[in-house]
Length: 436
Image: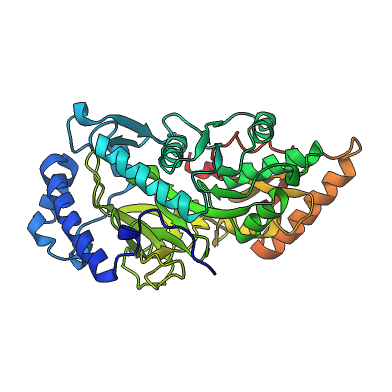
């Protein structure tokens, strides 16, 4: 495949030896900053009888314990900041829907770095200064919309910050402003496609050509469906608020893994059960260390995302390590009747049934001392008025298919189209009421 444009060739095509030396120099500076200025990390070093000088090489990073989401929550709101609040010019936070929010602070330099990293991802995904970019990630304390907005402006594209407007508004903006690039959550892109089909809008009548999507795991089947229904080429972008937001990694047009910004992050992959470091190419939980953040450096942060990382060369010319698409999360797994169940196990079945999907919600509860699994699945389109028999057919088909895969009884409920997701905002897929 012909390589596309590269936003920052000097950094993105560095030889591996230079990348690792660059990482080490920045890592040592970051560790010293965290040790001096963040009480949590100073205490962590002391409890493990370590000093910054003990981290003399990249391999020494494994001497440090992990940082977890709970550590960040316990430091709410400013306990993880490495600088006085007067030097923090932007604050973002997670939604806190599953617990105390995690808060992230950015200095002016941090914002510049973030903007640069997103620009790299957008260019890798095929967006240029000539594009009209419609962003339907949410704006606000959630970091997604702002990060993508800044990066698109940096490369010179025209930005439409439509955010979480309703689907009718999204479609009208696409038509009126001749949108060429979509950026947002993949499941919402499918909802937009469905709404267009229901109103008879031909995607060929629009100016769309590319889409960059992230914020939730999505399968190759979902990618194919987005591309066919919207007539675009879709690539993946990855990030998480705790280490800086979108821009951590992104697919190039070869689509053989997401290039990690290794001049800003060190990626490790561990066994999620034992914490042991895994070899390149092995699937496990992603762990990230920031090596250039001023406002809030984070050391060995356990993401909960399951992936694999390789340093093999890519046809596009970029030399940064690549991570596999994140298709599941360690903390989304639920154990029912002795079986480990992941949302993607259910998604694989839902995708095979015509008339439903892609959105679904899993609820695990306990009744009479027994675990029960309930799954709400969206209709893909509105059914005619006489729907009882059609819904019963879908419920039975889904129930039978899932029971064959899972090996136990499952309750299926069919939900109205677009009723299980918010406009462009990621919502929980798994609700485990046994924990409440």
